[in-house]
Image (cartoon, rainbow, N blue to C red):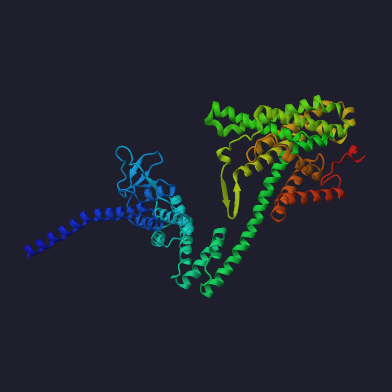
Length: 538
């Protein structure tokens, strides 16, 4: 009995040892055989190699398929060996992962891809990272499988779903699983109906495209459920599209507010039609460019803080130029609006040519700080961070200007001159000094608009010309000299413009908006909020 028992244990141990020794070479052989498919350079062989490498379980599988996606997977047609070129330039043997000794073999070719293979690559990478320890990688993998809808990833997806605990990642995996089931002819009808419900809950454009592209030979129940889901998604997308138009309108309105608020001050207090106001915006944008160039060469690590320096610099530079214009030209032309208009138009041409001489006629690049870069998805709303911060900036400038006008001596004198210039002069207010400071303040705020516009528009000598007409429309529509009217006018025209564009186009939308404003002014010549005062009402 002992001899028999010992004999049996010896056989078992020998068998287990043989299996342990035979296991790794078998996997390596399978992996190497799968690699050989890339050397055939035929799309069908490459597709089979992708599936085989991803399913081999080899630790180098993700590196090889990632290299294929990036165009860094190479093959030698002579010996059918596969190589991976690292981003650093080092060439690795794909079978072992070790660097190639000496120089890489000559005549290496890249493994080709087409659109169908790119989807297979995305699905393979997704299945390889579905069990990654980081939730962000698992989420990206599930999203990649959803887009590729590769049936080869279904088994890995089922296994990952059984272990997933993160709610967001699990939802993405369920959506990916539903997308695969919907495109499989062998799937059961009940499973397809359930998959349609999962895709319907996703309610985005990708879900709409998936359901809209289903084959026409589906069972009637599935077709009816898919049609109902498409109708529900269309209604959902239409609501979010309205919200998106509203967001775009508010962002455009904030830009118009920054560009027009300084014009509202000068036009309201002084009655000057300043055609050079757009060039004050341009000067603010170029000041931002100069500040960034100085910081890029002297302190590149602080480039993200360049806007904090550019804001006061742009205000001062544009404000001083505005004071110089008022003292040098405009003060001699009060009461002659046509001559003032022609003079400021000439000044605008001089300033444009001066900027062309100093910086050239080409557009200048102004970098966006890291905190203003990117897009945040809120449901079906895409919020660009640069536009968001411009809205915040416009609100802060507006609030600060209201505070200056209400709580400072300069603001008190500006309101007095606006309401009755002769009475203010009789009360010992130096109206000439107030005119110069008012023009400088309005020009400085235009410079701040240039800082904001440098983040969303090209910095060029013609930057201000794109906004001068819209600025006058905002001022006249809201009420000359009324800041609250300028705010309401800017936001109203911005939102109206963005709602008209999808139906009439950008050019016809602006024309329609101009006609509407003209018709409105025929009924209310003083705009939405007319100023009150003896001189105004006289």
